[in-house]
Amino acid sequence: MGLALFSAASSGAARILALQPPGAAALCFGAVVSAALLISWGAEAAQFYVSQGLAIAFIALLQVVPEFMVEAVISWDAAKSGHLDLVFANASGSNRLLTGFGWPLIFFVTDFYHRRKRGSPLEVLQLTPHHAIEVAALLLASCWYLVIVFRARLTLLDSAVLGSTFITYLWLLNRLPAQKEGKEELLAPSRFIVELESIWLRRGVLFALFALGGTAMWAVAHPFLGAMQKLAIAAGVSQFAFVQWVAPFLTEFPEKVTAIYWSRRVTLAPMALLNMVSSTVNQYTALVAMIPIAYTISLGRVAPIRMDSLHRTEIFLSFATAFYGATCLLKLHFTRANAIAMLSLFLLQFFYQGSIHLPRLGPPGSALALPPIRCHVAVAWAYLVLAAAEVARNAGKLRFRQSLRDSLAAMKHS
Image 1 (tube, rainbow, N blue to C red):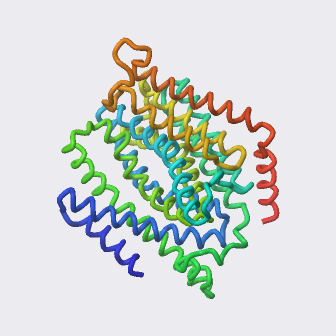
Image 2: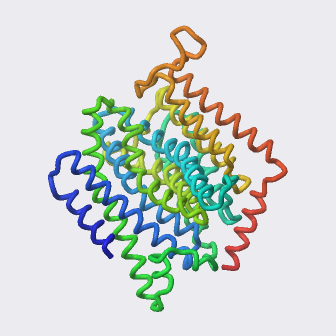
């Protein structure tokens, strides 16, 4: 109750009061952390009444509300100004940050607490066969990015395809059975909700947690980003760099809070990874589908969002990042090698000079001093080579098709 009151009060104050950037950022930070914890407790309890995948997908959708708001505003303004760089900067940066940084973060946090609790390193994060639905959705959505890159434009056709993928994904998750066991492993807040005898009271508490958490994140999104943008500009960060990396990091902060909270409890680490996967699916489908819609409404007529070579490169790299992540999960577990490879390539892209004004990897004239577009293409191809190697190395262990069949069969009996 105290956390709920703090979340409501701090988010309301951040929305109403005209605070200086440091104070606004600190107040919003507290509101986001408390809202993320409220939502995570609700998700832990909700998986015993709907499928775990649907519960986490719904939570992931609430968590990316700030990212949706930022992208909608950028797309709306782009139609008015004609400047499209920031549209693709925010979309590509948020996607790569979530997959390239977020997934390895889950593994290494879980590994740290696994060593503390059990005295041995973590080898894999194991998913269940029903999680094949999330993997399939991510695989399909990421592959559509190749179509976008080939056509060199983003249109309402992409909105229809990706939006349909997102709706189908939620519908399939809704058909899966709910969790049956594991209530004794819940912490006190989640267990309290599960053990409520009145079904209407239980539903009311869950609704209140989700509504309060989502509203708090919506309320602090604008003041939090505004405060951090002023601090970033004061520190010398360019607008493009802020939109591509700083803003997505802030808007995706709720996922990271929830994921780290679950990762600390080693038994819930698969839920943490699934939270990140669901957020990735949300961004690769619903978020990108929303961009042409907001752009068209703002423009007042149907028109494509055309892409230049830099935009296509950024989207191609986003595709490659998600595609490698999806191939890693075809075996329904995420290994240390996968986490290291994904994080290494994510960090490698920052060693090249590009639109975010970072130094080149090598001296001028050397083989390593590639143009920024070629460099990002090289990183993208490295992801794809690793994806092919992942499938080839685990060809005999892949149970994805069978898991997908089992999931579809479970829907018929749920």
